[in-house]
Amino acid sequence: MSSLTFTFASMKEGQEILVQRDDYLRVMRPFERSLKMQANTYVPESAFGAFLKASVMPWTQEEMEKLKKGSSDLIKRLDQLEIDFHENILLVKTDGREEWNSAYTRANGIILPEKKLKNYGGEKLVRLLAHELFHIISRKRPALREQLYKMLGFTIISEISFPKLLESRILTNPDAPLYDNYIEVFVEGAKAQVVPIVLLKESYENINAKEDIFHSIAMKLAVLEEQQGEWKVQCREENPLILNLEDVSGLLEQVGEDMERFNQVEEILAENFALLVGGLKNVTTSQIFEKMRSFLTIQ
Image (cartoon, rainbow, N blue to C red; front, side, top):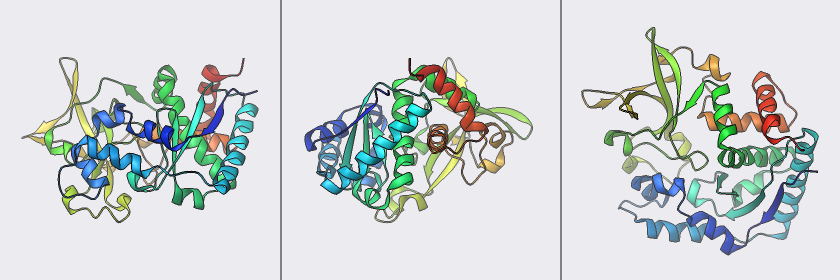
């Protein structure tokens, strides 16, 4: 039997998870706090913490019944796959304002916005929980994370330093807040180390945060260089070297994705894990499965 459990967080427990100063809050850029709060001025961390606390909501009986069924089904699937993860997962409900109605993770908590809960049920909910569970597994098992990243061609490195021109546009993923990996590709026939980054298409002051933020972001590749053990973004005449996906070769072949579905490696792996739990195997999910079993097989 799996030793994985799910617990409904109280309001206080949910608030404590959201304001815990982990890597996500540590590296979050000031403009991100303003963007999330739809503010035109600087937002201090204390005000953002109060905003996070205010986003936490109490559970309804209907929501708890739905999630009890979904989490129970997920545990049964993991038992069948002989994958175990000894952890108590806290389920936290929010109004969704703090992360544009997206589900995400912090510490050992899966954060579920009210709007998404209404739209998810059955198999769709099981896969959502599996996707988010993967992020917690990845965070808690760094050796497993390193091997899974390597499987898709990514190397874990020290935290990457970004120039100021990017610091005002680069977004932080709560599920993988550190930009600490690269993949080797070819640019005009020459090898290059690049990291996928999520960028605002324009300055945050011009973004309407009330609309779907995903219309205002783009996946790009930052070309890296190592200087005295520190990884930085290459610059040409002080301009960071940023590429489109179609500017490189050898990328999609390594990760097994097409250009429309390409994402940060953490998200690619999480989605493939969700497919695995849903019984939808392909080459990538089969490889993930074998790696997972070697680290998380029930004894």
